[in-house]
Length: 141
Image (cartoon, rainbow, N blue to C red; front, side, top):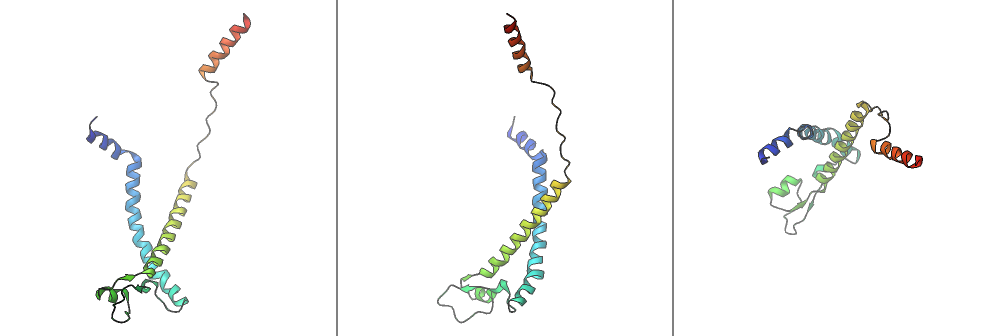
């Protein structure tokens, strides 16, 4: 079998197609979660802790930096290295939201799946039947 044929067989399997659809939907979902965190959740949370925007929390790492910088963008435009821990906090919150949403989605999909009916036993395997017949013949002798 050629490599091209093997790849075609691999790509046309249901699991690979399902995975591709999942990745595409996940990318679109990420944009929604990013907007949810940045535009809906973080502003009220910032107000609750004193009007602070997490995305603007940073530490200037350069000792030769000229003055305090009002934002990460201003520091980066000045060419200063920064440690952007506020953006990391936002990323962690996004991850928790995405993980929770995926958990709920998987839970609902599993609930919708029909449980498989247990198969009725079809009797003992052929090897056991033959062994029983051999035993019975040996007992009869």
